[in-house]
Image 1 (cartoon, rainbow, N blue to C red):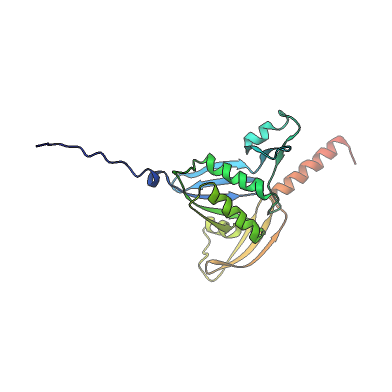
Image 2: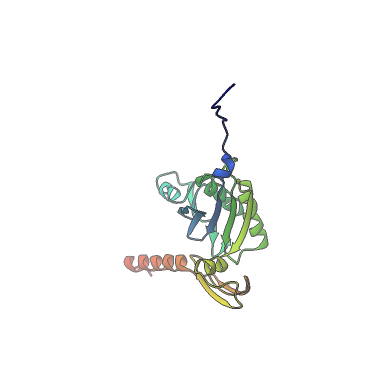
Length: 211
């Protein structure tokens, strides 16, 4: 009679690895938050692109480092400008790289919520969710930036009235939130990233004495 037999069990690897992720697709920066871990990625929303082949080479700070050290056909591209997606294919590739950077693969298929500018169109929203699913997300949902900002600020979004002003890198949005939904929204294409860029340009012109 066998005594003290040990039964080997295989842990549920997928359950252990799977995470809930939140992605903030911003004009200036992209952040990824993992439940229970905090912010796991914070990179500039820029990619290095081979202008001849259309192949995306790098993302974030690594993309910036390539510029000036590579042939002239390697260019820096920001796929989101002024609260809108300017290049569907590049944005989809950027989302794929982002999810790969935080460890998403065939065995680790998280649920993902993506924070997007409220000004993007229905076609753009569909492109973002499809990109996330193709990159490995088992489920992808979108949330508008003012609502995400209100939740993060601890505002009573389920009460009859709450106001939110979200000043982003490419857009500034004012929202009236009531009973868990956005009742009214106004967005303008002006933000901290655009302001700082214009100031830098003005300073450069002034220092060179150019008209």
